[in-house]
Length: 76
Image (tube, rainbow, N blue to C red; front, top):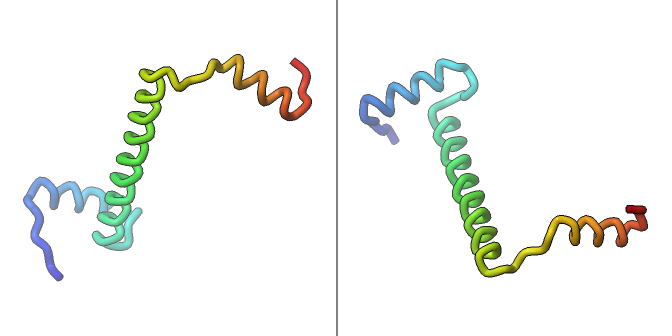
């Protein structure tokens, strides 16, 4: 399947291909889509964390550190 890209996208693709990092445009596009998927997952995690913060579902770092030290028998 042959795709034609708008000139600006074609220029970006060619610039990335010129780095030698990708074996093919398909590899480049696959990596870009994987990165976009990871970015979406990261953003969702940040949003969930902000929701937890706004709803008061948080613990202080001091409490968490104390729990970890106690669990592992580490002194303060």
